[in-house]
Amino acid sequence: RAHEGVPDSVGIDWQFLGGDGEWHSFGSDAATQAQHAYLDFLGGRGEHLDIKSGGASRRVCFRTMTQTNLKTWVRRNIRVILKHPGNWASRPEKLLLQKACAKHEISEHRLLDAAKKLITG
Image (tube, rainbow, N blue to C red; front, side):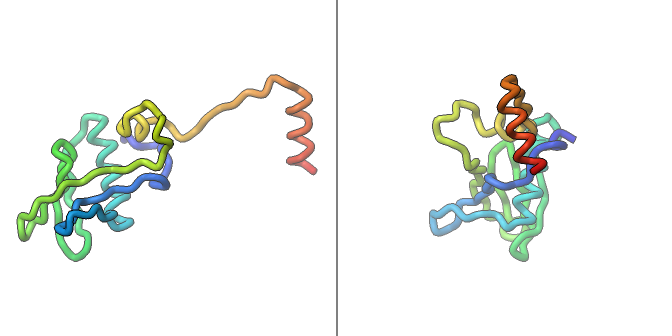
């Protein structure tokens, strides 16, 4: 799957535009499902997700970034908000696909020895 190895949804907020003109966050389960399905979509697999949230069945379309209530056929815009510094140049889609791990190399041996002493006591 395209989303293996990515971090959990900390810092990612899936939202829909309510009838009141305000953006509202998806429920926790729906947000997790949306995140994983969106990553699959970005990887070229599927553009729809059917979810049940708030007692209603909805179809999310990532191509149009909308959700449709499957009983009332009310269609609402959706968006994903990433909690990242505004000056980052990467688009949200690229940020969502990057891996969670980072490797740092310490070339200053005195610093490395001091860090080891702090960790081991």
